[in-house]
Image (cartoon, rainbow, N blue to C red; front, side):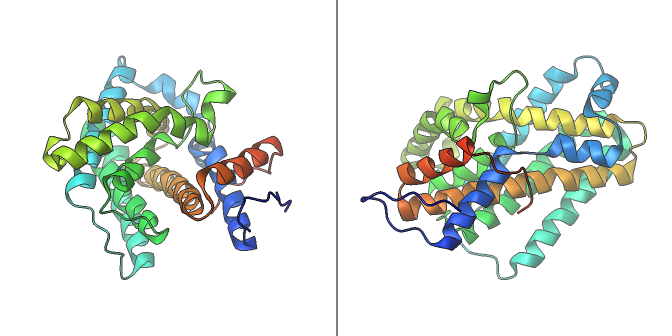
Length: 281
């Protein structure tokens, strides 16, 4: 792996260089649609045609409601205590998400508004475990909001150009809203999460999260998908966001160690020198 040497930059360990490249591969190649297409044997676009009239509005509304619920969890019930059995916790999160997917696959699109907040809340717990493992202090509102921010990092919106889809581009686009929301929460407390600063952040995240929700709904709309397929699709869904969270919080850990400017410079160098896409972590 090429090394960048500057007088002011701390010396990077080989382990951290590998961690950054692994994070890059995950964060720049989100793959829910590809994985779901491989699973179903038909493209996601086929399922999109099967969704009922007005589905886009319903998905946007369901996505925003799910994120508001996730934020409430983040502000009120998450803490900095690491899981004693992280491997078991990951498995339990996946089992729970599979169970909610079973209902979604069996009953279809009509259950989305009920199933999605539950699924999103479970996924947030899994994201928080990853954040703790990477050294985040979840007593900090900014770190808790970083967990919710993961839902904006799972892939581009349709119509985005290349400049809009990069990991740092999305973080920069959200940075002002994250800062203002964190400041408000520090001043007013978790009971005030309905404030405009917080709602603006949720709305921005929901714009991107709804793309992944649309693809999930489209996959569940494919006729061959039943209850078992819905569970499998939800496992693919949580895998996407767990992988994204591992990349996101690895980058944040490296920023705390080396400084954001140095980490971003090395990350952008990887974008200029494409690495073979591999979304595994």
